[in-house]
Length: 163
Image (cartoon, rainbow, N blue to C red):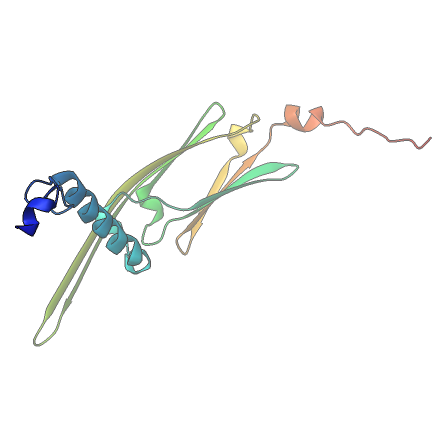
């Protein structure tokens, strides 16, 4: 008697799809591997300005009399910056063109960095356009936008009484 005939099925008759044979499972595994290796090295990745658009860091502050906008623009000069005020919107535009070259006896190093930016900052209240001032020192642009006298006169002191 042949014992193989007693077994109701054999390995040859079973249609088993392994992950290696399934192209979607293989693609999923490969994509997971790529994203895992990318996220593992995320801290080591640097984004130099030469590979993408130049976006300066800006701060906007308000006090009782004025708005102050501070922008970090390293490597730029006041000639590279264009400021304009239109209604309640401050426009800051600039272009950074920087070239560096270093030559030695056995080497030559050259680096170029280009980028332009344009930022519009909406202001919540009217400013006195005649008194707006800007200064540029050590790569930091500071814009002072005094509030108009009408806005300053709007503020009213409300007294609080105790009961």
